[in-house]
Image (cartoon, rainbow, N blue to C red; front, side, top):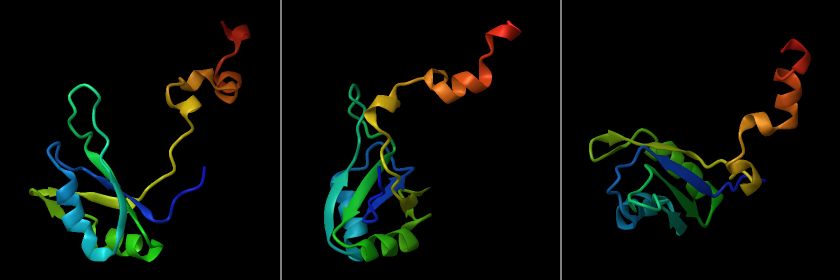
Length: 111
């Protein structure tokens, strides 16, 4: 899966951080296409991070440069390029179920 160069990751945010707070902080760098704040399905609290997608790649670069290690509610945030999401079939898969891992670390003759 390919990285979206217009998407940034915003980490180390407070559980109470809302859409409007992030919008006000990041709109100064360019037009925002989307803000996604993943929430815990049970508590509905944020999971401590968010994604901001800009209309333009250059705006995302400016946001990363200017906002990384900025303080929000006396807490330094992490702002960096978002990594691509892993395919769903790998999300809940233990590493030992991977064939390469199995071949490298499991040798029945040694048991």
